[in-house]
Image (cartoon, rainbow, N blue to C red):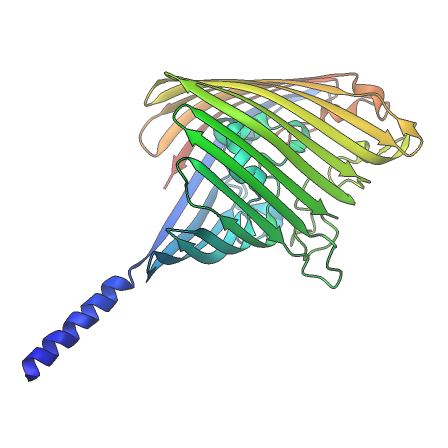
Length: 389
């Protein structure tokens, strides 16, 4: 009888250990290359640059089985600059993502912390810069955040399971201040992927981004803003489609960004016009077509074209409409499962560039550029190596 009790107790112990299975994974990525940019103060500039196609990062992620199809999950992810050793995302220790939550095999996941918004989760992957091309192919000033210029702090996020190719989600990011509506955000999106076809749509709304250091889009530890803009309100919405046939994938997306009473953070020449006064609103309409051809498991080439029209409304009238034309090409070759080399180039042309502030400085539209262009044209090129671990 005593032996039977011992065996039963040991069986229960083993069952409990198996039930509480957990794992923690160390992961990371290093993207390092040499960049060329022309028309920087009338000169060409060569510089080593880290994390252009994918941000260099390291992190920890984990899961614990809670039983009944439930798991506890977490992710801590830190971005860094390889050339200086500094932390990215305005000096945040885990600036890329930092969250904890629960996941269900039947209902989806609910997570809490610093996270990507729904535009990034559902729509960004249908653009060239949000999937294979990186920051050099981002839309002017990354106005739509498809290159992840910022994340949302204090965010509660729901992500559904996959319903035969259909996924959806939403999130709310608290202001964490005494003024509930100051620097808060909400976002929602959906994607349908079935065979060669992928469709997506998403929306993001932020009140007073960069108004403080505690809200949804906030000033970082180094004193710099997280997003590209400070404004009374920022709204981003759009939709996209990708279709694959054989080794070729074609994509199209439209994304609109509206800024109400922008005070600007990084692009002071766009916040006010010497002729039209401070901006009452700025709108960006981004149209993108892209294509990718997979020659084999180890090699692909991609190309993209973006047409962006900006509308500037000043306090004393409406300005002209600068039109941004951006072309990009990229080739990537895998040396192994974890290491690849790539080359890419981009060309930006701004038509009607001097219509807002009289200087044409709004040509400095690419976040990866080494500096503002001295004319309405700019060329960038990069050769790089990327390693994942």
